Image (cartoon, rainbow, N blue to C red; front, top):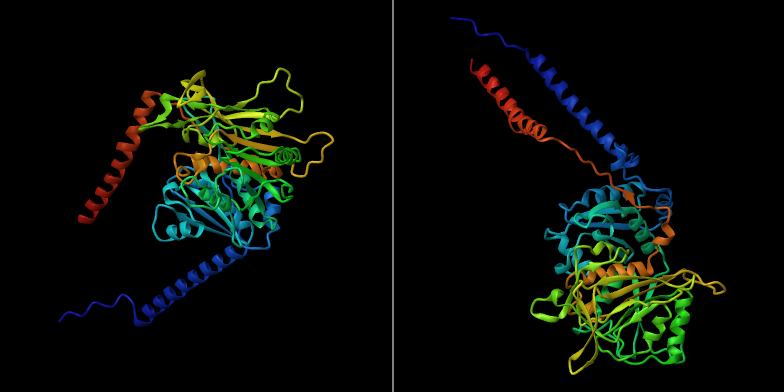
Length: 485
């Protein structure tokens, strides 16, 4: 009877090997735990490549270092969007700078947590857009993805993203939500204006909610007969006024503006004068008593709604390129022409235009009128003027946004086209604290282009489509043959 084959290892030898394996495994786990602990306590970040470097400026570091309350940052983004990568890295950089910053990433396309975010911040599903939400003790501000880029529009055939403004906007949002002094906006009332609290179709409760999303407290302001504009008013909104403002009221609004006030005026389709036309003329704004039409830009099935898609290169409208506003029977709002403008004259930028087929219809009676001029007609302007010599300015430069339509920000049209985005951008420009952040310039985006000949392109296809996959297949075949032999 043949002897049994000897064991490869004795019992004690096998026990020793098993013990060593267990000890080595526990040691590796212990090292991993210690490394993770050290990473949490000492969060060092290493950067490879200047173009991907999300390091923040000294000003942002000082703002973050001054935080005493917890700020939650919700990156409510479509993860397939091109800006998600830079936004993700920048948000992580902010989080690494302070234990008071907590970052959460939520893909708004997914159910569950995304629905909870919408409900918490009263977001409208139909108007979903990638955004970053900053929240500190119930005060919150949103930064839209469309605001974070600067574009190179030198070649209108291809609008290129040229710079990333994430840090500027993120730091501004941090300052906004952590500042105990909240921004206040007042809606004038008593002249037929839209109601900021009602849910009716022509009311503006959705616009009011957008202000709240930007950490702006909304209040109503009674007629100014015998009273002044409150000292804490940082944004005055006149939305759809149809009745005359008294001379006393106009003088108080003018005084507010000369002291660095911010004014947002939305004119109704009603063509009666209110006195605001004379006040705005002093700010080089010409308000037309007319209706603007554009047959080529009329919405299908609704000739009264003009779809405006021509925008100026201005912070309010720059992010809206390739978007459109839905305006109902707008009137012309443009720059007032002066023979010799004064050195300290307000700077007026016309923001929104019809196409070259636009027409201004004046002297309207029974629905008919006379075509006064045609071409690209301006429908909105932004105005800015710095301090005036001899006048004490408390709020900085004066800023105005004037639009020849109020219905486009009413509840019935607020979520149409880019109307909501325009309101968001206009409000942020009017009350923005970005002027305090001149040390935070936009970060230039590097662009790389490889020029190859047809022959080189064929070689690349051969390498990546045939040679590389074929090599892997051949190697696998050789291993299979060797094991079979």
